[in-house]
Image 1 (cartoon, rainbow, N blue to C red):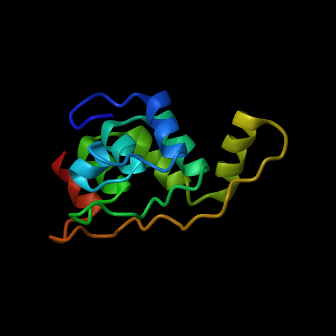
Image 2 (image 1 turned 180 degrees about the horizontal axis):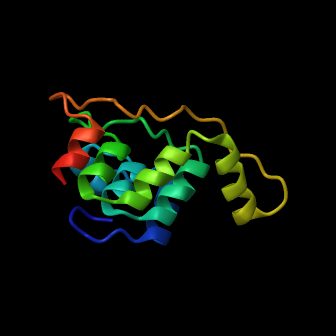
Length: 131
């Protein structure tokens, strides 16, 4: 997805699967990850899928903003809930089983840092209050 364009979930998931968006894509424009971009735009299904694939929810952009802070700033309550539920392994495994059936297990990934500040000291809670 190009900078400023709507997120195309199937195409962006394919790009993520093949190593991310190199070159002139959105990640190059803002220094962000596909998970950050999906969270910023409120794409709940894409956030779920990226987390299940093992995307790190704590990777900041060049200004220290995380996917959680982007979702809070955008007022995307559904994405905030998904990111918060990410810390609950049982929830992740239930979602994974729903997508793939059986007793599939989510890959281990770091717990989300809910109060991680940006480079200028703004926390996700502060950004939510601003939104």
